[in-house]
Length: 138
Image 1 (cartoon, one colour):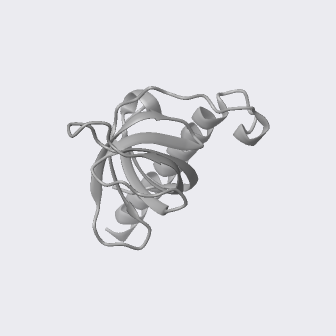
Image 2: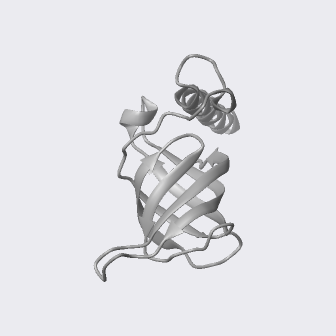
Image 3: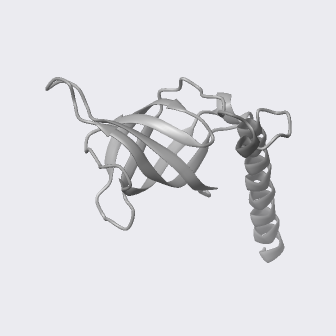
């Protein structure tokens, strides 16, 4: 029984490592060149639900990405944070982005730009860098 559990954990580890390699490849644009060496990472117009909060705070807020790259996220959310606010963000990348299956990613970053709503029906807009990410295990 323990061997079976260990084998299942190993399979999950391999799967997570594979997803991380796929995400890194996605970030590099598939050409092996780090995003730090490129003028601007490729942006994808993906509308994905995300949860975000100021780092270390308890309350999560919901939002929707407008576009995402490996270095940052532009999103609209229910709560406006000022530039330089450290953030934690959680989002589920669809399987179309990751290949085999969807992946949940926890990101840390910082608000670089924020704009309040233009009308009452609008939501605040924020741009955050991604300084660190990790895959959340199922």
